[in-house]
Image 1 (cartoon, rainbow, N blue to C red):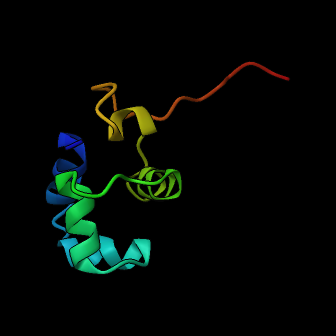
Image 2 (tube, rainbow, N blue to C red):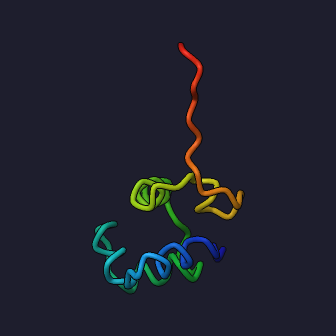
Length: 76
């Protein structure tokens, strides 16, 4: 599955695939395959990418067009 926000976030941040691959600890080729949907993103990679870009996982996975992280403001 190809995720448009994944590539867009990288390009908007002026990052190369090689840069993001280093953050994830994978080769540039592996990251390229994540971005094009050849290899499925693992839960671990999704979380690392969402943390790196400081966006919600829903935004990263194109389930939302709102990149903001959900913040629970209620006291527990």
